[in-house]
Structures are given as structure tokens and as C-alpha cells.
Length: 106
Image 1 (tube, helix red, strand yellow):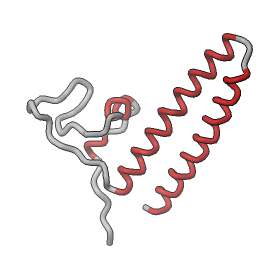
Image 2 (cartoon, rainbow, N blue to C red):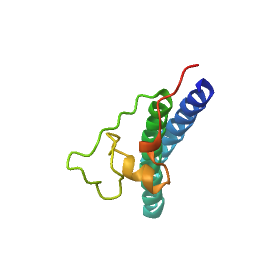
Image 3 (tube, rainbow, N blue to C red):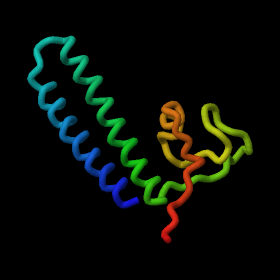
Image 4 (cartoon, helix red, strand yellow):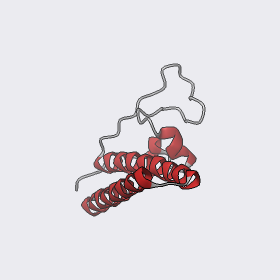
């Protein structure tokens, strides 16, 4: 487990480094198409960093899930809705965090 967490932390560092470079380039970009593309890349990198942070929490077992208050599943989510604000995006990527179990330390 420690290897996956270390790898994910390194991935976040690389994503943050790329994000900084995109932000730096945006400040000096002159063409509107370039600026629009950089804004899209920046948004994507921010989302990836957030998602990787949730992956780390899932790997450490700190992602909490709770049953849906109404008893019905929210649109795009299964019952046992997660407190993770990215659960729908993760579900769209094929990742069902409701199936994640806390790590076992043997």
C-alpha cells in the first residue's frame, strides 16, 4: 500500500508542476486560441490533482461513505452515497468508490 501512496503523491507533484507551467504560459500567451486551450488544461490539471488526492485518501482508508438519507440512490450514484465530492466524476471514469474497502494491516 505504501508504494501506491508514494506513487500517487509523486503524481500529484508532477501534476502541480505542469499546472504551474500552464499558468505561467497563460500569463504571456498572445493568441486567444492558445489562452483558451491553456485554461482548459489548467482546469483539467486542477481536477486531476483533486482526484489523485481522493485516491490517496481511499488508499489510506480515510474516505468515508454513508447511506443515502432518502434511501434512494442519487442520480449517477449507487446507494451508500459517498461524501466524496468527486464520486460522480469517479463513477463516470468507471471507479466505484462505494466498493472500496479500508486497508487491512496484516
